[in-house]
Amino acid sequence: MFAAFRRAEVLDEASALRMATVFGGGVAGAGGGLCGAVSGALLALSMRYGMGGIEELANKTKSYELGRQFMAEFEKRMGSCRCESILGLCIGEPENLQKARELKLFETVCVDAVGTAADILEEMLNAEVS
Image (tube, rainbow, N blue to C red):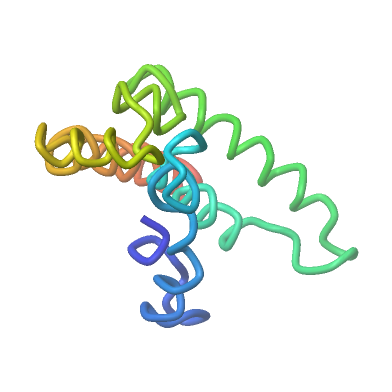
């Protein structure tokens, strides 16, 4: 998510992927935290609108507002922003990770979560331009 929506003129794709890796799988693969699609979208919003120094303090407020707006819409569409709630199990536990693989949750539920996050982010970015 972050790599797809990063500012390409500022950060190359490989660096974006490296930076965001730890946020996957409910943060560091622990399964209980924020969905990786949500984390990536929040990183992308922060990259575009975030605070680059104390002189941009107003940007912090805007980033927080946009982040809350994103999370509220994601939760409305997906039921939660937390990996464990979205998948229905905690993939940080080896037996649950195996079960998620067997149930193909990464190919179904996670793909839906990424698509939903991308749709919301696209809508938000288009609204900012309008």
